[in-house]
Image (cartoon, rainbow, N blue to C red; front, side, top):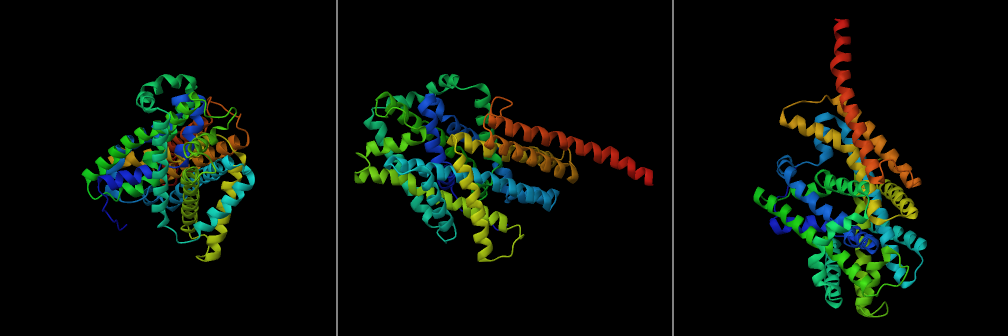
Length: 432
């Protein structure tokens, strides 16, 4: 793999932060904060903590220079590569759905109905994904910077800067309002995702040297932790100031506050601040569809043509739209798909890392068995909980999905080793 290693500390940190600082981060945190207070920042805080954990694998990824499914595929066969790639693809379905839900929630501030908006946004995202618009990413990041400045202005207008400074202290105590399984499910799934998700590896391997690598990861973790408490503080301050109308949907809180900061939905500043959220939803949604389509087409199952790309994009769009119609809390929806990916890949990846230390080499058959069972278990549980959210075993949907995947993957990894080392070996001896 030819690498373009030119990222310095600040460039790497900016890219790692931009991979997270989007609508899931902003609207998801705001939605949770309306009922949980500062504890609504849990998901955002865990992204920062996960980036710190990434430091432990950063140098390894930097030296290898390959994405995770390529590493596992090279070690255990093409079947493993396909399975990991498919799990990565499926995890993006939830992110796509979140963009549609978020975009519809933003436009609801203008009184536009939700379901038709999701359909229109889905069509726009799929259309944009088929166009060569990669350079538009800089514009989208600029709009998120505008949104960031709008939130800072909101803190100033609401006299909430002292609240922001106290928010890390209040965060720990406000977690008492959440159940322990929910805290564990969101925290562990999110923290574990960051070190094993390709979204982060693609930037890490482009660091120009090891010093830039470590400093960039550390700086991005610090920035994410600082940003984590910004939406929650604004929402809590607006709620305490009586700005939010009674019965407002949590997903609408941040768009409503930004419109209020800008003087209303009829004022140019209010419209600009809302657009700073809406347009990135289209950008992120189309980018995700582009990545999903590339992942599927890279398997070479379909002939390389425009019609194949249109077909794959359409299927991906319909899957994201179906999940968006189902709805749910933004953070929980994101983390459920994260949990499915982590649950499926965690045990095989740990087996690969153990092999890299030279302490023990798991057989290819064991890893294939582990990955296939863990993937099937995690995806099945995810589908069940999407259909019936009340179907909870460990007290948290996220914990259920991740737990069933990791436990089944670990169990069958060991079963595979037993079969390989005892049953198959004894069978060979009998034939001899």
